[in-house]
Structure formats: C-alpha cells, structure tokens
Length: 307
Image (cartoon, rainbow, N blue to C red):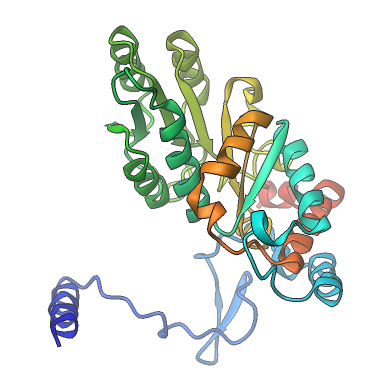
C-alpha cells in the first residue's frame, strides 16, 4: 500500500544515516531514577530530566494514590467542558505563586503548552491593518517552540544562540516598521545546560515594546530555589509569559503557563492544544502539588547544586 511503501523508504533513509531509533530498545525494569535496570544491568541514568528524584519521592507517590482514590484516573474531558477538579485549581494557584504571576494554566504536556501558548499569542498580536507580527526565536530553542512559532501565523526570525544584540537589532527594525514583536527563548537550555541572556533580552523588549516569553522547562525546580532562572535574576516583572513543565524536575507530568490574568484567560480560550485536549488527571495534579511542597520543605535543589 502507498503509505507502507513511503514509510519503508523513509525508514531506509534513516537507517542508512544511523538516525533510526526504536522505543522498544530500552525496556526499563523499575522506575527511571538515577539508577536503572536495563536487560539485567544496573546503570547510571544520565538521560533523565528528573533532576531532583521527585518522581519516586514517598510524599509525591502517596499524593498520587490518594487523589486516584478520590477522583479516579482520568479527567475524562476537556476542562472547559467537563469541569475543573479542585486539586487542579489548587495546583494552578501554587504555580502562579511559584512564578510570581497572577494566574497559571496547566496543559497536558510541555509540547502542548508551547504549541498552544505561541499560537494563541500570534493571534492576539495579529491586529487587522498592521503588518504580520514577528516572532524572534533563539536558534537552539526546543522543537515545541519551533513548531509553536510555525503555528502562530507570525513571521519568524531566528537569531544566533544567546545573542541578545542580534535579537535586539531585529526588534529595533520591527519597532521602526510598526510591527508587533515577541521574543521566545528557553532560560536554561536543555541540551547544553547554558543560560539565555535574559536581562539583556528583557531590556531590548522594554525599549521596543516587544513581548517576552521564557520557557523555564529546565530551570523550574533547579534555579532560584526552584522558582526558576527568571526569579533568580529578579526579572519576574520583565517577563510577560513564563512556560514551565511538571514532568522534569517536579517529577510529575504536564506543563503550565504563568502570566497576568488577562493573558492566561486569553490563552485558556485560544490555545487549541488546551481547549481540545482532555485535562490532566487529578492524581497527576496531586503529585505535582506534592512535589512543589517537597521542593519548598526539603530543598532538594541544594543537593543537586552540591553534586
């Protein structure tokens, strides 16, 4: 059949380039913690994003089980249709406090969050009668950011990694042309662990009236006493929108966006990856909430820093 033939040809090209992967090759026996059991061998796990070991923390695991007994294993519908669990509302309030913003909104995954947030902001920035908005993106941003920019309907300019001067020059030209602009960057980058020049980017956005969006997926739980790099640098008031994840250092699943109330309300209504997705299950929300409590009470980020 045509689809099978096309897939086989594409697989052959990947195989020849040694870029073909198989999800079944690494069947773990037990939890994906710092040590894993793979085919009978105990190995150190340096591929995990669970930087603090919270996915197996007793308080986190217990919270998940207790909430499952109360609310079951699925939210069963989009939250705008089927209703909002109390534990989800509590989690969103806690995340807003963590990031120093008025409100937070939880998505089903980090990928869905970046797709939805950037697409929704593209619509908001696209005012009739004005040139198409401009999204200015770091060249090493995650694939979810790249795809979110593509879905936004904006023109996308990619600037050299961590080059605030280059990003600022693009913003200055956009301002001179009367174009609305948005800068999107990770704070701590996923592959190299380096950090973005957030203070310089914030200054460039302030001087040109651009919107600044920062993805804190790999800084949440790690930097700034767990509150992220934006907080650590004292830039909470300068960053318009913060995206974070629950499935890395916090040891749960899902993701969130934090911003001022009207921004979150717009995203809640315009982000298709939120509106048309089944909400995060209550037990997962409870696990994330417990992870935030452990982060506050036990400060596992300090042990990570020492290591």
